[in-house]
Image 1 (cartoon, rainbow, N blue to C red):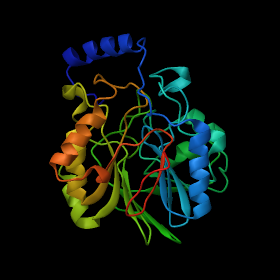
Image 2: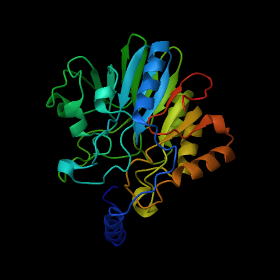
Image 3: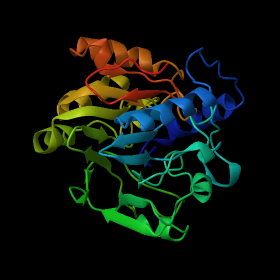
Length: 314
């Protein structure tokens, strides 16, 4: 939520969200894969040496491409806020931190608490060997927490390694970690490209004309991970988060063959019903010409191969 929404909308929103914080969330059957099964799925795909995608919840994914393992936006502990405050997850992360495979690249889109989880970073092993890729001016946060290999990227800058190219791309969002650092660090989405696959990770974003520009300059993409939740009330969220319908439009703009809905089903951040986003996303996607197989609504902990088709390991 950016600071330009009217107070008449902001105050009722916070009162409503405070009340929702005491509600019990009814999680549908099948939304979360049991951790032993999720862990087994990751290990099986690693053993087969194939590219895959595992949803850990919200905007956190394990991505295996080009022989490298990438972890995005690791919000993996309980609260999206400092010191045990803030919204609380109603489902656990798909894998426990101790069960994560060895991470080659940690890719973080911006510094909001539901994308940059300090408690998870403290417990993350391999800080001396993994490479952290972040937007401009966010590197010092990781250096102060023991990470040794940090790459800061401006929009349109790329980091090339054997088998993988990671490029920071502009998105429509903002940054703030405290009340005094608004927009002091950059925010970004990312292109992740190997010889076999081209993936777009949207981080956090509203909809805008920049995505048509990205499609022309960097597209097409085989797979796009795009936020479909945290969109109500629109007067507050339209400048920061896409609706499910806008997520589909974004996917079309960048030339994505497959769109994966993320940023939903994990933590109550905004006012829409928590399991409304996938229904609207699937409906909008079909109307836009995608098939059901091109529109992925994953279970938390689910792994799917990033080949031309699937089924998953569910």
